[in-house]
Image 1: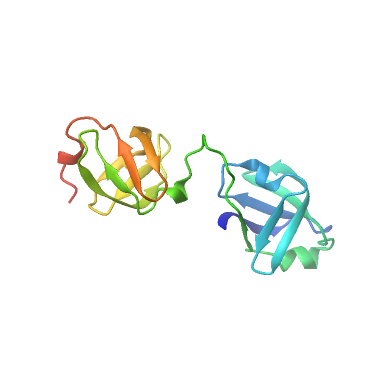
Image 2: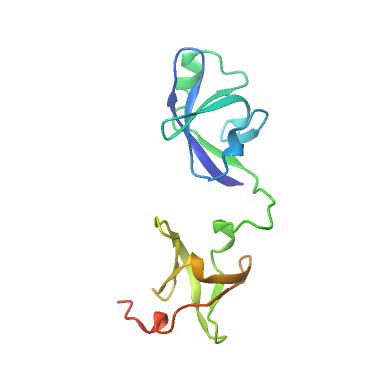
Length: 155
């Protein structure tokens, strides 16, 4: 299961909640979606965009005290099977190999950046995601980087 968002607070008196997604896939809160929580599965009845997230109505949550009890609840779901999508969780631990075939380190973290997410390798090197040309989830990532990228001092 992947963490896809969090219930941040109640919204109104009828059981609606504010949800902030950590996923860029807004269909996660479409009507009928079933999301996992530490307290069990929850089914989305309806949702609508609101500020930096969504106002979501979950099945069986009809009063403010019920929605208040859900404050800070983590929402999880199975990964979406989309072969054209690069999934961040599939990059962790993979060996990064440059265009010359040289292993450069394993992905330790993925840093958010407005221009392009960045792979942080266990060697300390930083590689923008935009340089990925192919990958095998969790195994290897092939990159085509500008000359000298790995020559930079990472200390």
